[in-house]
Image (cartoon, rainbow, N blue to C red; front, top):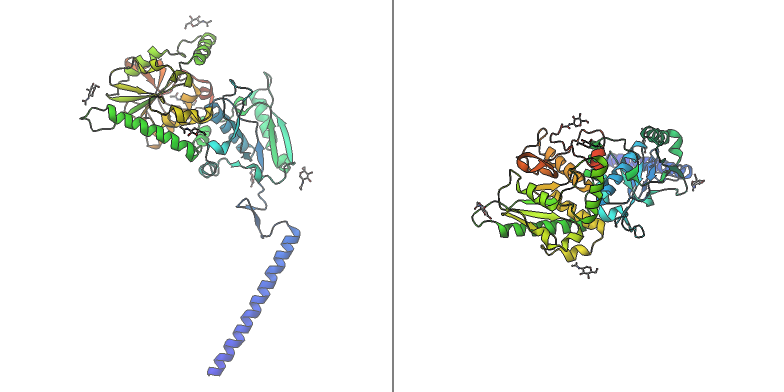
Amino acid sequence: MELLKLKYVKFFKCHVSYLVSICVFLFVMVLIFRTLLLPSPFPFGRFKNNEFEWNHVRMKFLEVPQIVWGLNNQKIAFARACLTARMLNRSLLMPSLSASLFYKEIDRLEPISFDKVFNFERFNSLCDGFVRVSRYSDIGNRSNVIEVQKGSGRRWTLERDLDQLKEFSKKDYDAYETIRVVGKNPFLWHDHWPVSDYAKVFECLVLVDEISKEANEVVSKIREFGSEVKNGSSSYRTPYLAIHMRIEKDWMIHCKNRERRSNLTNICSSKEEITTRVANIPALKPPTTLYLAVANELLEDDSILNGWKEGMHPVDKKRLGFNEIYKNYSYLIQAAIDYEVCLKADVFVGNSYSTFSSLLVLERTQKIIKTGISHACGNNVRWPSYAYNIEGESGGPQLWMTNLSDSSLQAISYGSNSVSCRIV
Ligand SMILES: *[C@@H]1O[C@H](CO)[C@@H](O)[C@H](O)[C@H]1NC(C)=O
Ligand SMILES: *[C@@H]1O[C@H](CO)[C@@H](O)[C@H](O)[C@H]1NC(C)=O
Ligand SMILES: *[C@@H]1O[C@H](CO)[C@@H](O)[C@H](O)[C@H]1NC(C)=O
Ligand SMILES: *[C@@H]1O[C@H](CO)[C@@H](O)[C@H](O)[C@H]1NC(C)=O
Ligand SMILES: *[C@@H]1O[C@H](CO)[C@@H](O)[C@H](O)[C@H]1NC(C)=O
Ligand SMILES: *[C@@H]1O[C@H](CO)[C@@H](O)[C@H](O)[C@H]1NC(C)=O
């Protein structure tokens, strides 16, 4: 009996190892054939840049010209490039942003890589399935490129631009690994997408740690200042209003010209108008901290800290002791820090003709919607925003929310005086 069992086990073992050998042999043969037939060591795909890529889904790319101008023009241009890539079913090759304000310093464009400002991995994980950014090192064959010239001029209409995009989404162009758009920077391209698509892209733009750390530093200094000015007895935290004051010389010249051209009178606001309207915001109880987000040239002028209503305590970067650290950064990073500080404010007050203000209100509106509020913007919403250049109730600034159902970004990229106060 024992012997029989042993024999049986022996036979079985032998049989199993025979089977295993055959399997291993077959597997090795398959691998050898695959390797000979395909440049891939894995049966169904291959690893490339730590990503497993299925053989039948080769990644294709879109390359765009350097992105220029102000921080928020650059964000809009970037989103437009992403949405173009999405339409072409391609991944956007990480574009160069510009660290300096292009229209002031043409000779010092200072390209800065996207991932020096925004977190690359976070972007792709948050926007997964919608749009995607790739590194140049992901490209397989750098000469497999087709160049596309974006049209320009009066005769290059919205329809022609859309037709061009449709043409390049066709299968015929699948053979080209990269489509390279040449010509105008993406901010100047025609717009074919609803506000909600842009909003989705903006949501995926998270600052790199180094920059968000600096922004948090400013916010905690503002909070510290707030607890110093607070009445001893009150227990709640002093709220801070961020005011994006566009009153520097360049802006005043620009906005006066615009008022003349468009026959409007409510684009420019003087400092007096801003202080009066802010003083009249109905829902605010003193004390409050006012964070004045102003152009650098105004930091030299201490008078912007004077003239505010009693109980409203103004600070700027200089008074917070942040000016020296701030000066170390390029224009783009400075603007990104200021943007973040305004985004986190309890209340934001800006100019409806400024792209910076408009994009902030868009993001703050998204924040409000996420809390479940979807209809009105009353004085009692959390994180309210106002436009100081438009008079609202009781002589205060106009409450301001972005209409996320708008069909184009026009109002946000070029400014508007119709600041919707109802989200549909
Ligand atoms: C988009 O590209 C992916 C591969 O990159 C492919 O699987 C998919 O079928 C394409 N979709 C369209 C609509 O062409
Ligand atoms: C790269 O693309 C070019 C243009 O399509 C082609 O001529 C060339 O053979 C490709 N090189 C490789 C290694 O596939
Ligand atoms: C500008 O607007 C005013 C009223 O707001 C109007 O009376 C005037 O005719 C307009 N001028 C032009 C050139 O449109
Ligand atoms: C706090 O002080 C301000 C003046 O700075 C005053 O107007 C306000 O009534 C005070 N509030 C409380 C709760 O004491
Ligand atoms: C600014 O940068 C310089 C050189 O990069 C450095 O030595 C200095 O400590 C920085 N200043 C601040 C306030 O961070
Ligand atoms: C928001 O935009 C949509 C689409 O353009 C429009 O129908 C709606 O009236 C707008 N809502 C407000 C409050 O402006």
